[in-house]
Length: 382
Ligand SMILES: O=P(O)(O)OC[C@H]1O[C@H](O[C@H]2O[C@H](CO)[C@@H](O)[C@H](O)[C@H]2O)[C@H](O)[C@@H](O)[C@@H]1O
Image (cartoon, rainbow, N blue to C red; front, side, top):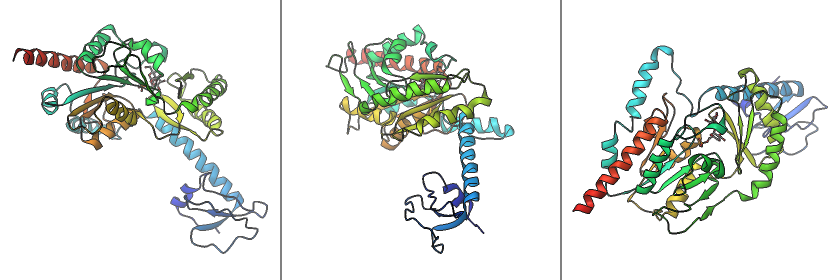
């Protein structure tokens, strides 16, 4: 009675399926994902191109299957690290690792080449926080940055304009970083502030630069409360209010409970179509559905620093998470500077180089600052 392709079945999401006559047990379905068939049809029309006729029972069953498949797909990606690990068979693991490293060499090993390609250009540094400046830990409130890392970043900020670009809210990340001379782009770039003092790269004292999602504040607060309530029975789940976005952590949740947690989060978000759900490292991230991300924040900061259409700027972005990919992509598209992915494993990335962990990030940043100080001294002698 019903014949539809796998592709058509996949398109039967809540958004593009319209039930027109359930009593009759007959349904007319628009399979186009651009237009929904709106006319009420007591009697289904002879199936025109783009429409199929199926029984209500079968459709509902298929919707259940497709819903279940969607949840499974999410749980699968919750299991995968972020950005997604490249898939490989155990036997080809080391081979893949070697070939990935060839395409994303260590920024430490390539240090001289990196410096050469930045010659005559202004280096601008963008740093993600969690997993980049501080190691990933179970409790997000204890993701401290080491004193040595802080000293290195301070030294770096004296040499180059330096920004922290993070999913956390500015207040929280500032409590960890404690450096007033940096730019901060919190809430995935939706809250941007300039240095309070001590930066020779800006003349303004404490300037609030940009908050593209300010009207979402009341909605975020409301959803935060609901998520706290909905997830309180899931042992290990933790909801974090990041001002313009929310994180639901599942690092400490039993894997068997992940799909239930995801379903709870989705059930809250159903009422808020202006918010979207994305994923980071063992975290579900809820944020305004606007065209703004870490990549846009990077562009905004470059513009604010006076490098909008410059060819003599060399931005370097270092990050470990899926959300950092937006910034890596922008740099790739602009053909300026590059991204460095912090990862021990091969991952699908637009970054050009890699570093294995925060301690390597610190070594790289330390070498950059040292190189700059030496070259300034040499220049002053000439
Ligand atoms: O953009 P980022 O600075 O990388 O922020 C992304 C999320 O980072 C934090 O969570 C992550 O780090 C935690 C501490 O190591 C870890 O417990 C968690 O599993 C990671 O996802 C932060 O708590 C989140 O709010 C950010 O969205």
